[in-house]
Image 1 (cartoon, rainbow, N blue to C red):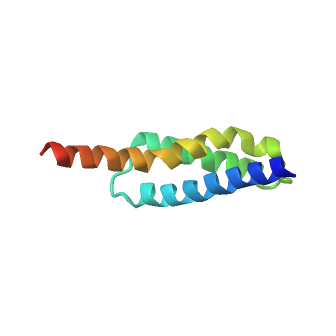
Image 2: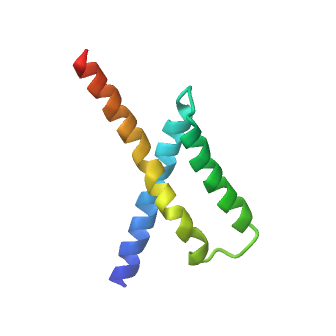
Length: 87
């Protein structure tokens, strides 16, 4: 039971962080090709597997992309604050 709670907590925290980061990432006025590629890949997998029953194997290829998207805005804001400190 503890492992189920642990894995579900991981999925929910990653999902919430992903959604917040995706919103912040798409809110920026300039989208990079990297962002379009990552978001396009996530949309592709979502649309392909949407008609099927949700199983664990369908979301496994997306978990690393969720983690990447969750980290992108943090690195963007860190880079922006580092530039402000230099000037």
